[in-house]
Image (cartoon, rainbow over all chains, first blue to last red; front, side):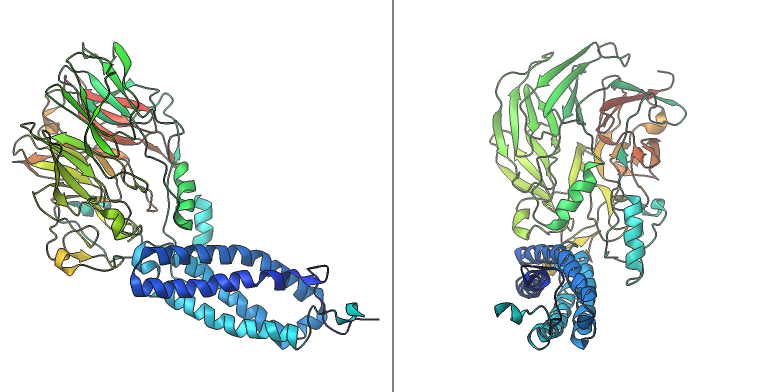
Length: 153
Length: 433
């Protein structure tokens, strides 16, 4: 009997890997914006350094997160039929491109590594993430992507 | 590396205009009034470093009227030179302390810079060469002084030999003709060292009367990215009282001063200075300058007088207003690390009375600049004319067979060049001598 909900292909024991790992880059990129704000207000280099590390870690983990996400996206036609999946995927692709640019901006030395370009990019990324994460939530909580309720019976 | 950079540039060209402006003719930035283009802050700064190579049977090129020969080879990172009054030549084999990684960028830069540096581990010692008959072949080569900590500057006053380690000036007893020092040194004065020790070479000289020492203490960053607190007493030339070890800041705002020398005619203190990076291929020109007591030369707040650097926050308009321009630009990113005034008679008259400058060479512009020894003619104690290339041929395409660092003049008037990639000390003399 076919499952009722779209299924995650990249999963271990029914747990989708994408959903497990995606909080790491989200946390990193939101954190980047917060430490950029802190640097802007204090000009204390430690905040800019933390931003640079957060961006780097966020981008590195994103490589894996994107791969698992794409496997899920192409692994089940029903996922590709969801508007939320397209908004989630394309929006996050844009956020990642901006974050790559932002990592290079943050590799500058001292003040202009953050103000103004880095800070603006970090802020835009957070706004994009708010939309894409909402849609990612819709995929799971409204459309049941990766859910396997029948396993409980 | 070039391929990688091209791919990155091509990829980024989709979203941004380019990887930076094209370099200008470097000669426009030599002299008292260099052309200063607009600031360009990169998305991806160019890192263009030649791979460390070997000389083999080749040697550097000199113009007609001069000849060049290796005085010593197979050294371990020779970077600075000092000639003792009896003609013995001290070769400082040295390297910087390990750099901490505070940012992802530093991790990447360390990887790239590794290929440009000699694979030879530095001796952290001083080697003595004795060529008493002046034929360019030392009769004696021996380890003179060991157990040093990233040494660079050396100066002898009377029977006191001072070595500037990266973190202290240490005094050793020396008798004329001595070929090895085993006596423990006495610290005269601590210098700013680690844990961050970005510009670690501490150049050293003594006042003509021997009462004061002068030490170059470079900045602890490119442009305050390690925080202004890390810059305490740095980017300055220290004046140290030889009797007490007390110090004061003789001049400030000098990002990385090296090659400290007293000009023989006016007895003014001179230095070559490495200026800041990542503002474009032609900003900011490195320079040589007489160093005025109490003067502020801009770093980090401004360059070439009062051109404000937007990367420094908080800014200090009060200090910018005090900043004075240096005397003579050498063009951008040439990395001058050695300087010597030539008062000998061995070289042709065209090379007498001015200064030789050792340009270690650029790493952050698409076209190499530096990688040569130039001669700057002087008139009445000031540079008087265009710098001339004297020793070239260090680069062979994208391979550096050698890189010039410290300079000295030996007792017979030969110009000595420390080459830290070639692990050689070169000696330039007149073609007929």
